[in-house]
Image (cartoon, rainbow, N blue to C red; front, side, top):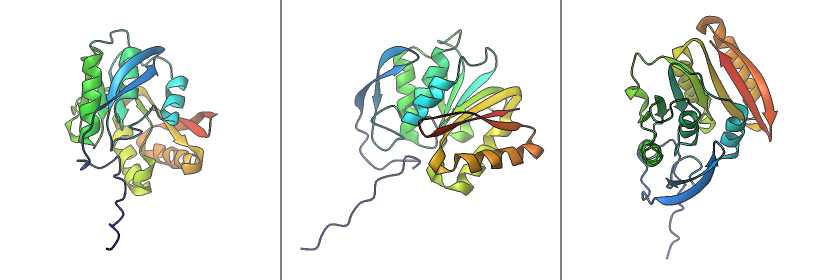
Length: 211
């Protein structure tokens, strides 16, 4: 009998994952507190808090007190939840949790609801309000989508930063963080922003874009 064909693992940036949506509990520490959340297969780092995300959350402080916040590539929600929890009004602060993966959005919405964070809005990219005034973007961007798609993603969202707003990105050094920083800086000549590296920890670069 011939061998069964090997099935490649599903990408976390698939819009509609085909794998079973098997919810499982995840106990994780966010914003200094132990939380009981849920996750599932076929989302980014679906079994734990990703190291790069942890580095990002350890690096950034409290988000701005005004304007909307954006978690770009939310996965099961650790960045969006932390943004809300660190806000002065965590129950109502509007945090856009954006992901092309519908399962990721469902998980983020469920986790936000379990914590009473009604301001977290899990949304597909096209569903973010056109008038949303983004004062902060925090992201562990999906590097593995490939350079053209990644560049298109950043050029879609960085221009939406409000004047004075900033984006904090975490990118693995060996996945092209330094070249990405140069590219973002080059785009800033036309886009109206500056970019700099603000830290390097555990093999990750921390990048800041200021509008």
